[in-house]
Length: 193
Image (cartoon, rainbow, N blue to C red; front, top):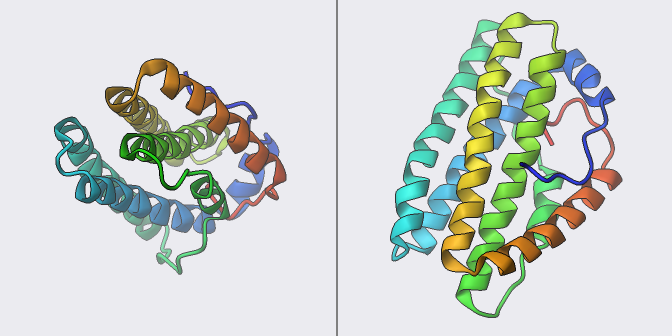
């Protein structure tokens, strides 16, 4: 369903488990950024009724996830810590085409958001299966399902504004580029992506 062309190196979950405070901090900021990305899309495209209708509850959900991660940090006696640059998201954002028809620009924005959700979903699955902490395994299992739904939301919205075959072709291009980004990034246990 997610279509990722390159799976995350299985060693990532073991490395991540050793720096769970950093993973939770990075995860919190990822959820915050996901909520703000949806808000930005709504602000930029308020006339797109379907987009506003679909993304408004996603904003609430992502902010709810941020609060859930904060609770997990607090439960472990940890503090939020500092925001870090997400090199993965930064490189994905560079794939967005500038100029051209506004619907094409919107499609790129939606599909890049879909890819971030897909990779998050995959990593949450890895954490839900690989962590020793039962509570965190369950926590990430629940979030994995939510991220998969968000991926579908973004792809379906793209198909609302552009023909399905155009969306599929662009998604395939972006999936190939995303795999290259993953391949070239170092495996970091202190980052969600």
